[in-house]
Length: 255
Ligand SMILES: NC(=O)c1ccc[n+]([C@@H]2O[C@H](COP(=O)([O-])OP(=O)(O)OC[C@H]3O[C@@H](n4cnc5c(N)ncnc54)[C@H](O)[C@@H]3O)[C@@H](O)[C@H]2O)c1
Image 1 (cartoon, rainbow, N blue to C red):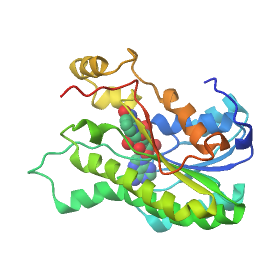
Image 2 (cartoon, rainbow, N blue to C red):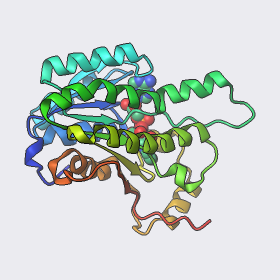
Image 3 (cartoon, rainbow, N blue to C red):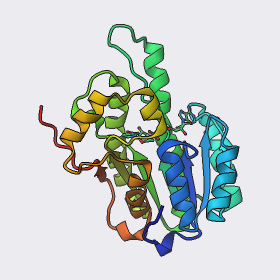
Image 4 (cartoon, rainbow, N blue to C red):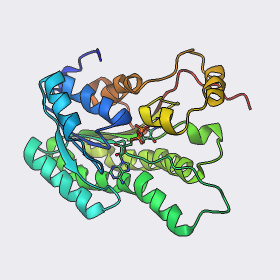
């Protein structure tokens, strides 16, 4: 990955949820290459990834195993990150699970479980990070939403609902935290072809349909959303808050 350097990011304490695979891994690498101190959580093991990043960037991320549905554990992980790296000044709520389901066969328990991953942690990570950011004179939060809810796609309504909720949460908390110099923005990717997307969901037909809708005729890769995230984290966007930045290759929904 080769990006512009945002000089103000060097030395910042960055916390990324789901930062060891998919888009999150590209984000961790992007922040490491800016000279940030990066801590990340995820449920699955990431020791190999940490070694790979340390070798590739010369900057070792701090991996804290944690299930983000457990808010107490998530808070504890953020405390550890702050103790190691200083108060978190950049928070990226990236982790999610885009599980498919139908209307009829979905239970209240499954609905709650999905929101516990896809929406609830965002509020509580911001609640936890805000005092440290306030004391540091400001901070930046980037919440990963998605264009999926605007496309009117079926098949993953609880995920799409959470993603719509994230843009609402972003606007509300931008208002509350703006006076403290804490900026809260959302990033809305289009379809980003991670390994998981290719393994689980990408059919030749869906890929072709997406390509039809994109102005730019290249599928997005994880590194394509890194630059926008770094921009939202940096002072380059210092007067931007409460916004949702779309990076989707120019998707036009034709009906
Ligand atoms: N890939 C896409 O096409 C796409 C499109 C639009 C938006 N997004 C958004 O971008 C973000 C990253 O997407 P991705 O495709 O890389 O997802 P992914 O599923 O490949 O990775 C998600 C990460 O979250 C972690 N995670 C999931 N559940 C967790 C839990 N309970 N506790 C701790 N960690 C957990 C996973 O371990 C993984 O590291 C998500 O917010 C997603 O909604 C992705």
